[in-house]
Amino acid sequence: MRARDYTKIKAWQLSDKLAIMVYNVTRSFPRSEIFGLTSQMRRAAVSVPANIVEGSARKHQSEYLQFLYTSIGSLVELGYYIRFSKEIGYLDRQNFDDLNSLYEQTIRTLRALINFIEKSKVKDQGSKV
Image (cartoon, rainbow, N blue to C red):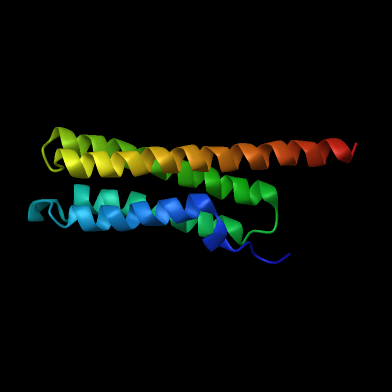
């Protein structure tokens, strides 16, 4: 089986854009956070598209789904860091709104992808009976 072209996956496109935005926004975080919140946010942000990429290369749908579940876990973690950063004053209103809007769009799209694959997996299993 050929690997899926991850660049055509909408969830990957959005999460890649979100990771880039996180990297750009966290440049203005206090230097004291370089090994703390900045590092955690960046790691979580990059984990989302990276897991979509790795999962897209897997042979079986169940393996692909496992990587998508990991991806959504990292995305939810990032959502917390975005809110936390706003609460402690590291993100201004505009950066928070931009990040949060893209976060919401990404999580909806990733959940839709997972639901689609889960439903198609159930259909495939039903047709084998």
